[in-house]
Image (cartoon, rainbow, N blue to C red; front, top):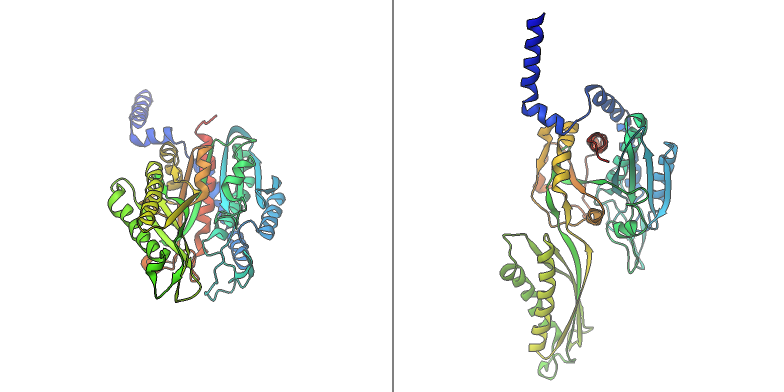
Length: 444
């Protein structure tokens, strides 16, 4: 017996020196019993999550108009016995779950708004709704998957409520309106949520967000540490010339020709002035308006577009170069150009320390083989603003049906956008695992 005891101690010492033991010490994931319990609860809510998603998909609402969606969400959260606050940032809903043990405050966020897009799919739960958007009646569709985000977060709230005794600290469930941008001059989205105190009372220690992706295989997670998604700036360039007859351009100053030169020159900022080995830059002119008749050179032209950058210093440089470029080109022709730039979102930045800390939890939830490190994307997310208030980690969950070619999948914000909702339970489990593991890592 004595020799056996010595042998066991030696084995224990050997195990304590192993990389596996060190990893588990740094990242104390759920015990087998807890993991089994979590799996049971997630499996139990899976069908409900799909049903919630399909209902929300069938009845979408535009940014800052998510009245029915908010009521639907609030009713389910109240039924769980959570502390629920409504009317945050106009239509947002925030719920608190106080766990059975002391610990930190972890926030989970989902966005609720849909888009002015016509749905072409023939799903039994397809949207046929329409709504007023800036004075125009438009079709409305969840063409970016926010319906799945809401459903998965409701699922996580349900599971964590059932496991309340196992939850150290507090979980803050944030259901945010207007991620796609508030209409007109309205405030909205993450900045207004933050302005109204969503990251305080109680103060959030870490925040996690997830986005479905139509071109990533279903059940697969993609992430990137550091800069992940681009900032989004919207710009307006007003070019003012002098009106004249279309047959006699020498009597006027043509703002259309000046604008054409400015558009071309903007692309040289990307190709010849931006340090693209550091981070990508995109400048897109998406809208131009000028003139009323084909034989009249107009006095003024207005063009609008977007700028995407993945580095804050480069973002500032691009702004300065665009203003200088437009002004000097216009001046060379005797015209004037006024450039205004409005930053809609910042760079979505995943805190490297938080990513390193919590990546094993995502892998434990769905299997390491289903987790991939990705390249950055020039898409934008207002989740970026939460990172100013607490360490943040934002990642993507796949919704592409098995066997389909990602290159042929319909993109987000399009009429044919489609999500396979058969693995939304993966998102629910990830959210729960992140909360439970972060809390078990001894924060606060």
